Amino acid sequence: MGLFRRTKEERFDGMLGVDIGTSGIKIVEITPDKGRLQLSRYGYSEPISATKAGSVLIDDAPQAARTLRKIMTAADMRATKAVASLPSAKVFHAMITLPVPKTTKEDLRPLIEAQARKLLPLPLEDMILDSKILDKDVSVKYIRVLLTGAPKVLVAKYVEIFRLAKLELVSLETEIFAVIRALVGRDKSRIMLVDMGAERTNIAVVDKGVPYITRGIKSGGNLVTQALATSLGVAFEEAEAMKRDLASSTSVGFPAPLEEAIKPILHEIKYTLQLYADQDFHDNSTIEKIIITGGSSQVPGLAAYVTAALNVNVYHGDPWARITTVTEARPILDEVGPRLAVAIGLAMRGQDESL
Image (cartoon, rainbow, N blue to C red; front, side, top):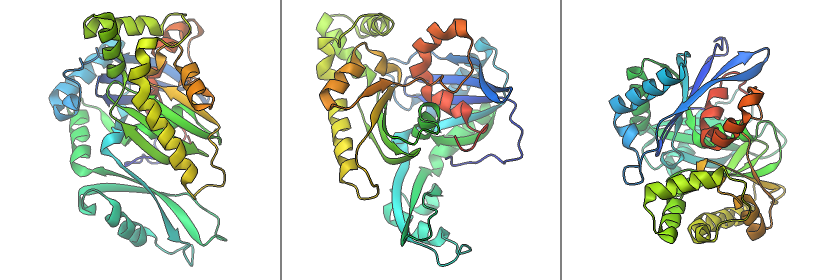
């Protein structure tokens, strides 16, 4: 689902997935290979320090464009078309119900827009609104419609970045849809996705590939790093390096100093599970599994720790599962994969609109 859509006739010769996050830019280039998607190249900028993180790159289009081109040059990327992610915190999500139309030709747009006007944080005229009808069964009385909206001002910033970078911006979509494409695909299970970034953790409950609930909390890897720094009495930068070393180690068990830092995220996961259980738009309220991803999800023992705390099976997502990769490169790809999950999902867009 995207706020801009590519045409069905457009040939797919390779696509860049560009994730402009609070800690830097991540890019994945994917090309078609004998009916499958193949990883061509990837790259990312050096992480922005916690004191400078935020929407710095989005608000500075020339700097963002220069950083983007620098990564592409270093990685020898050649695609000229890109799909980029909009930060979930700045995008509106909602699910509405409407009466089933009397005929298949009835235009639902006025009804959708009327409902949206009641819910949007800005006037409809200041937003780009996308909608997806979820129910095709005409025997029901009401149909569900998934709404996604982004401020036009925000979209304009992305358009400017890619114009300066001399790239064709094919589509914009929110981070969570990219993560669903990379980690869920056609899996029809009821899944919770937890994407742990540097500054923010995004949570979504996905049923049959549709995000019924999306939530976010301003808590992520930087808090984990700070907890480690405080516990060990070292600088933030040194603690960040130690955290990355931990992620690539074979140690077991969740580090005790990090338990306090992870509590806000754990609380939000519990709240979202309860929120989903209380809804009446689904037949079964049981979440079958939780998939965690993002650079901050790589702390050893995290999956087992959350599994024990919630009594729900928790797994690390593999964003490369639907991508052809070089076998010899898998150790390093498995290490960087969680950080690139959004970019991977973005780059996959366009090859198959059902993903």
